[in-house]
Image (tube, rainbow, N blue to C red; front, side):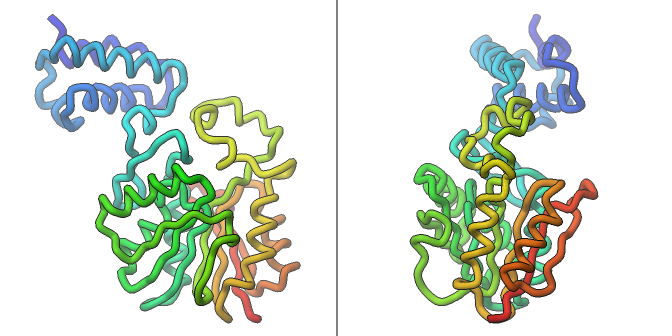
Length: 276
C-alpha cells in the first residue's frame, strides 16, 4: 500500500537542510494539494499517475534542478510568483532591496524604475506596497518580459508597466525618483556557477564580466541621466563587491554612497543619491 507517509519516507533526495521540505513540496504539487494535507492525511493513497509524477519530480531534483522550476512558482515578499528557466529564481536576500527602496523612496507618489526585472519580483513587491508609485519594469529578454507581465496581470497590480529594454536603451519619459536593480554580478570564472541551483539559471542573468561588475558599471554611468535631483540608485551585488560598487558610485558623483547588509549579515545592497 502506497501512502503519502511512505512516499515521503522513501524519497531519497541527497542529504541537505532542505531535503525534507523539498520532498513535501514536490509531493504536494504532484497530488495537487497543500503541504498541510500531507500531515493531516498521511495514510492517504494517491493515484498511480500521481505517484509517477512524484517520482519524475524527485529524479529531476536529484539531478539538481531547482525546486522553484519544478513547481513553476516561488514566494517573494508577500507574493506568489510564477517562475521559469528564462529568469533567475527570486531569493529572500533580494527582499532587502525592496525594504531599502520603500525606506528611501518618496512616501507618496513617485516614478520608479526596476532594471532587469526578471520575474518582476522587485517591481511587483514595490507596487503592492506603494499603490501611488508609477513603476516601470524592464528586461532585455522577451520571455522574461512576458513572464513579468503575466505575474503583474495575475496579481492585478495596475501601477506597473513591464517593457522590453536593454537597460536604459529603450526608455522614454520623465526622469525617475528611484532606480533599483538586481543585475548580473557574478564573475565569469566563478566556480560557484557549476554548483547548485545556478547551474540551471540563465547565465545572462548571472554573469557580468571578469570581475562581475560590467552591468553595474553601465548602470552607474547611465543612471544620472534618468534620475531626478535627489533620487536614489540602489543596486544588489555580490557579498564581496560593496567597496567596489560604492567607489563606482562616488566616482560618478553620487552622494551619500553606502552599503547595507542583507538578512545574512553580508553587505549586499549599495546605493547613492544623485544631485545634478
